[in-house]
Length: 567
Image (cartoon, rainbow, N blue to C red; front, side, top):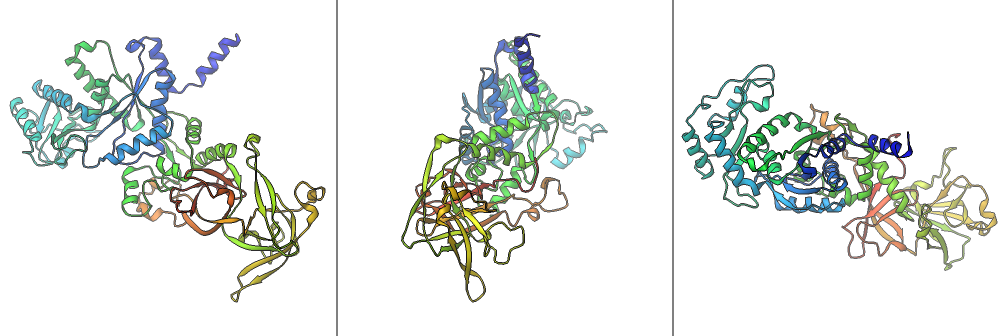
């Protein structure tokens, strides 16, 4: 096999199954070689990491094959939708690095959808049903037993047309009537058993106001909206696979009314949803968390929303790497959140500046270091990228170290600071603890140590072996900060499967720990919201938007190492 052929074979192997479908359609000349996709979110909440997977697919396919991807808001239920959600969705897509060709709304097609529904009634393929939702559900039968016909199934066409008009004139109460497609009550696919295609909602729409009182259902609006727009590949998640025959049915009915569209055909394909451990993706339950004050908002860094991940310090590049890693298949799976955490560690390791910060400080006094002396120690900004250079950090007689880095009566394998044991202060000197000062309750207030002047980093004696290296900041040359330590929001691996418990009972009480007395080196005093850093020995952190009036607030994005899983 030639090198060129081998390269082509490898390229084919790397395609996901939807890319294979697209390439086959292109090779066969379908839709005149045109590729058009769409991302169709309902504006009833903020997007989460699962939507990011769909965004990467919808926009990525168009980008890869020189096509077009439009953004379409599925705004057919005004009681749950809001302009706030529209704006947030647009912001999230752009943050991920994508740009839509056009912005559409399902509500743009309300007149055309209405006309199509009227045509179905006129052709005897739809009727007004006055049964209650409970009666309709019971009358539909079961997956193994056929349904029974509605008593209104054969009502006169003119009567259905008149009642349909009244539904939209505000003359019919909510729940009193629906428009159903007349298909097949014995069909093994339950979605074909005379599905509801219109219902009454007496609530103002965020775009159309009170113009409409009768609103199309998702299964009726979605495929037709794709068709009106010229979508060639309608890409959905697997739960819509059973809806696909109905999608095709309505599109075929619509095509009969539009012979001018020729051979154009929209095709639906489905891929697996993203399910993450220790995470819940239900927008309804995420909304409950927000409304009940169990989180600070949609952008709470513990939330799986894109805006929450952004606030926590995740980058678009890390999210893309994660989605590339897990890929697209036809099989549902529960993905370990450690893979997402690994992706952000890998990304920030390559580009985050290394700085010193002490989250839970205790004072360390170097008793034999001259009072008033200040040395400027050189600190490498990122050992992975020499071009990032270095910066200076002030070393003085009085320092702060982490309280957990000292133990007065330490076990044998404690390699941090303890009386009589030498440790290195990173980028500075080797020191040995000589004593402590405690308050009346026995809490350590100050630690005393002596330094060896011949062990400064870079000097010959600095190579002397010690078992521990500690980070530190100068008391005088550091600034205060608040540090928020975030952990997983739920205590169980798959909270969605805990059917016998209220999901609120599964919340992790330690998902947020706030440290208000942290100290960081002065290098950070001009940091801006969303700037990323590695706090040496502690993890990756970013500046929270709550930072203001000189008060720095940092969020822990992720720890340096995964202590809970092995990838």
